[in-house]
Length: 350
Length: 278
Image (tube, rainbow over all chains, first blue to last red):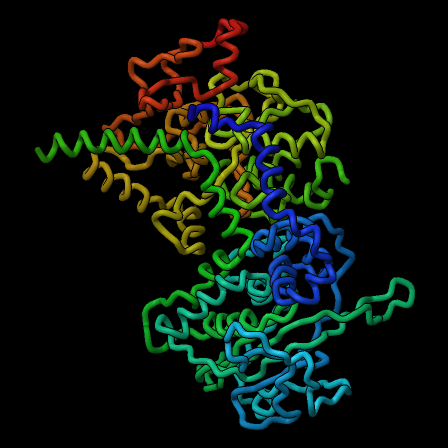
């Protein structure tokens, strides 16, 4: 009887969990290392959206959630919430990234060159076995590579619009801002945003609801050094490296604060190797701070509230799934209002 | 692990937000809202408020849709008791903190009790104004004209407001507030309630409150009655109660049955423990 089913209670939850662990039981056979080394983009996505750079725990979360990456990122966020914070590390500059891959579509050739690095962009997507693994890669210089952004020459000529820097870096995990949102808060929300949501919003802007046709000025993946103040020496010490993706895109020109016409740019940055997310983020950044000229009306991706409240995967995924919870009280209320309105309508228009 | 899971910094922040919320009844106070091991939208706001308010001597009750046994209630109660080791109860009168989703218990709440309501949509103006900055401005100016226009349009077309649960209320003659998705049947219970009412939205990162003995009125036109859900001629098939909020259940033969929605109320009636109710 329905009545019993709704009140599943403790026993039902337990049974359901047992059943769930049975249908993903083979995950025991996967080691964390196997996941980190083979499903690396899944791991990177989880640690980026989970907002905590931890390959090992991300691999564990992927196993625990049977490969449901939204769920896996949720595990990481929940864990992150319990971590004690020790302080704030100095800002990382894009130019400090030890480069693994860097491309620019804005220029044919650039200082430092186009470094394709590891990428499957030009793989023909056929499900046949290839054996690239046996080949050696050529022209690879094992020296550490550090490069300035491909847009730096334009910036040095003062052609690029600069946005005002926040005086104090906001921390959205400690306080969520009211509008107008500080730029650092907007960047934080996007940097841990859900890839698919950001992709969709960015796509609205490039396809038809905005006039952003961006050019990828500088897209890079690599290893960024993290420094932290040593408690005794009182100086910044390198404590390790994190894998990151950074993207700078260029849009059309726009007036800056002084009314001068400048080239506009957007910036995207996230943990792990996730080029799609970084590009989408740079486009959203561009759109938010440079309203469209052509469409006139408000578009979708240039609305701060739209982006600030709708790209967090943990939130949208949680809320969407909450509709599975019983809603029979509110549904009963709705039904009664519905029935009364029907009677009223019948009476009025008979 | 820390008592009640949250670290002391988080508790401090939430307590400050709660104090501010109590000082300005019905006003939305932003807070950081930590990620919990329970999903956003599943009561993380209420959970954070409860974990912040709870102390060793508290007795906890958790309900969802009026039931102590509902899956979500079980899950949240289990989590809280695991991280606090506090005593839990299903008896409304025994609890010092009641976390609830979508209902206010049938038995009247008393002084010293706190009811924590889980809130999906804290901003009452969302349906008529999407811009966050404008919403703030409208609240500041006590400009609720759009809500009144909506009520007027609904009344003209459908004879009454189309809102079922979450019926907007005016708190302390100042702020209009979303009372969480409680049925209209529960709305009058907010008025002059002896208990402290905390409303907390985790995903939307807002806390608000109704202090004890505060005037709370549903928005309505002078010449129209505020109509609550009615179950005419209905009796609980278990305990025989009348005139309360019921669950409507269809059995396999598609016959409809009615039971008390508030399971604690029903059980108390059945045991005959409380003759004062109803």
